[in-house]
Image 1 (tube, rainbow, N blue to C red):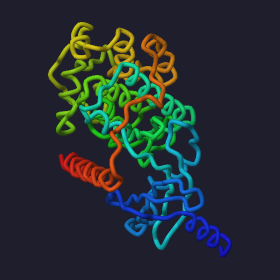
Image 2 (image 1 turned 60 degrees about the vertical axis):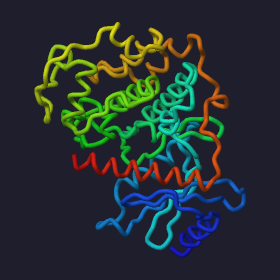
Image 3 (image 1 turned 180 degrees about the horizontal axis):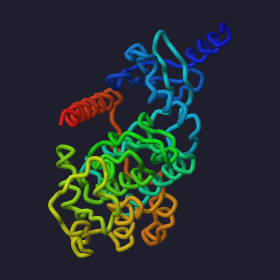
Image 4 (image 1 turned 60 degrees about the horizontal axis):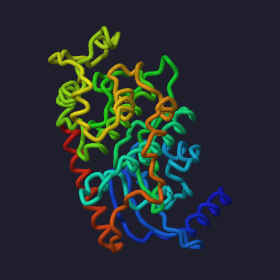
Length: 342
């Protein structure tokens, strides 16, 4: 016990906590440095005392999965240590996210840029899925960007291992706008297809630079989704009407190719094919991450932009950057609280 405590104190002394840049119900995020190397790090302090029965399972899962996942398109967990009644996750510091770039209309996206971000997202997701991990919360602000341009999947707080066929899971995962229709219908059994749906919606958002399916409530999310992509039927999705929260909605046809081309004016035929394959209403018909990576979209001209040449946020003074980051996080927390109440 004393040896473990000594190792923990030694680990804790390697890092500094300098500025608080975000806070949620159960965690506070700081920016700091690794003392020896001067490397900038993010320290996620989980407030264990807030949990009645010990540490929340999501925190345990997050640590476990980040320790298992070593990939250039997944955020790196550098260390873990405890302090007082808190658990601290030391993560690589990634100063921006994809949502910031999508919202910044002063930045122009080329087709090669979008292709590169999508490629890195799918590579990170493929690594998760081949290690039997569901992310369950893919959205633009969970896709972080390194100063070198690499996109990395982050925030594994809702992640979990692939279940066995009899095991039930909660359908209340994934931020609403990126939530697959089987989750909206209350499915307790689902697969990596829910992550693929999220990536397809993010792909659409990158192309139009605005949220693709922004529902204002769970019921409205169904309406918005089916208005855009058609209403599912037993013929196209056997068993859909038997899902726990299935509700009958106004019948709408699937969009024609011409309609999709009008929505996504700059998209090539292969881009539309790939987006369609990722956003099929029937989860059994969606492509896997591995199949998506084999799409000819990634090998046609223009080729994916090299990470170092991708657009970046204009450099800001650190204090201004952190003020902007806190404001964005506060805005997201308010929105997520409003969504939960909705």
